[in-house]
Structure formats: structure tokens, C-alpha cells
Image (cartoon, rainbow, N blue to C red; front, side, top):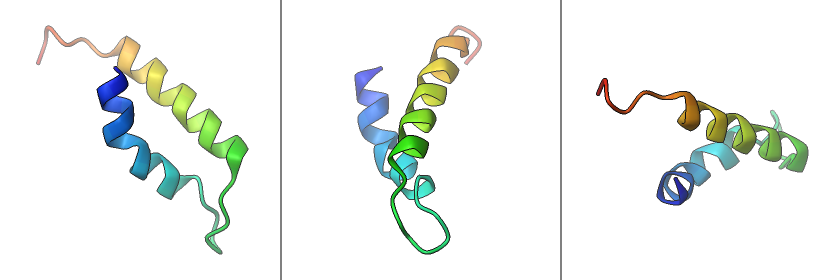
Length: 47
């Protein structure tokens, strides 16, 4: 999971910025939490 977080961190950072490009730490943390939850729910056996 750590490898996936490292790979997707630039994308998470990109979506953590608002319209003007200002980084939002709260949004970043929430997106990381949701990403981890999505990884946990993902059924790797199906793919």
C-alpha cells in the first residue's frame, strides 16, 4: 500500500489545490484517507 501511496501522491496533491493553486492541507489529508479506504475495499482477486 505504501508503494501505491507514493505513486498516487502527486495526483492527490494536484487535487488538493483550489482554483487558484493554493494547497489545502485538510483536503490533502481527506483525500489520502479516502484513497486508503478505497484500496482496502478493492478486490485484488477480481483483477
